[in-house]
Amino acid sequence: MPTARRAKITALGTYVPSNVLTNQDLEKMVDTTDQWIQERTGIRERHIAAKGEAASDLAVGAVKSLLESHPFDLQEVDLIVVGTVTPDMMYPSTACLVQNKLGIKNTWGFDVSAGCSGFIFSLNVGVSFIESGACKKVLVIGSDVNSSMTDYTDRAVCIIFGDGAGAVLLEPAEEGEEGIIDHVAQVEGGGGQYLYMPGGGSLHPATHETVDQKMHYIHQDGQQVFKYAVKKMAEMTERVLAKNGKTGADVDCFIAHQANRRIISATADRLKMAPEKVVINIDRFGNTTAGTIPLAMNTAVQTGKLKKGDLLLLAAVGAGFTSGATLLRWAF
Ligand SMILES: CC(C)(COP(=O)(O)OP(=O)(O)OC[C@H]1O[C@@H](n2cnc3c(N)ncnc32)[C@H](O)[C@@H]1OP(=O)(O)O)[C@@H](O)C(=O)NCCC(=O)NCCS
Image (tube, rainbow, N blue to C red):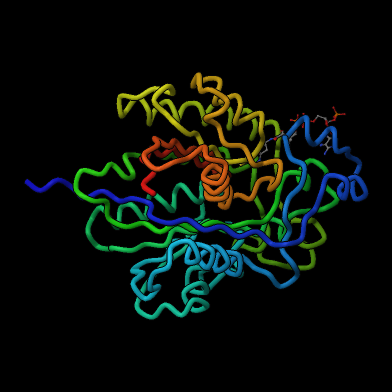
């Protein structure tokens, strides 16, 4: 019987807008301090999109950066999956806008809404299309313009979020190559009340009242999200490792969704992971939602923490609640 084909990541690109919002800038906007933000979150600065710069623009920027390091004919792309909760508009999907901007003629695609797990969930979807044999080249993109739904008078929220995007190319692995090994994923919708944007959907369509009541902004109960994230990040990483007969000691590089440095460190401690294996770039980018994992992959490659052949563990928890962890062998 033929063994099921595996998928692997063969290229990576990232994009962040050029505008930088520092903690010092925020000190002038809300009652906060650089020291508080750094101690409680690990963030120093974040990138913010320019007016008119939307999720599809960041996504296209990430694909163009991918093409610079790994030139190939974009017309070969079979499928575009975009993880985002800040699409350019309600519809058409960001995937359609990306397809059009890149001029890819014979492809299809769609968006995945999974909050901060958006990149991992999109990756799972892309992997399935490679494993089934339906696709040979899949672009998986995580792109979020969080500044578009951030209330810059709410100090508990505006300090956390930034804008950014990343893209990977998925292709079939060679015979015997491990590629993307396995994933676990879960949604627990009861947690939706702790992190959500209530306005603009079919429940609360936009009106003057929804704007006055700030319903088009991120609403967050930070402590509830924090507690859930610490518990669930550990649970999901342990689950995917145990499922594959591995422990934290086998992992060469750990990339967690960059929401709060304390959440990442708590998970790494639980897995008994040496700090040098843990990738942290939240200080420079803040929480870019679906952008964090590919942005952190890029940091890991550039700093030499992630090399060809390394066992890489990815993990994320996000609005929904959503959560997931993926185990893969880095292939380039
Ligand atoms: C939001 C978050 C940074 C707040 O940190 P925290 O340590 O939990 O802080 P608390 O909410 O307990 O607030 C502690 C105090 O700091 C204050 N505070 C909140 N934001 C502040 C800020 N930016 N600057 C200064 N003080 C602030 C609070 O008002 C509170 O003051 P009080 O004790 O007088 O009431 C933290 O809860 C967090 O990171 N949560 C997870 C968020 C997340 O990951 N979201 C994305 C999910 S993927």
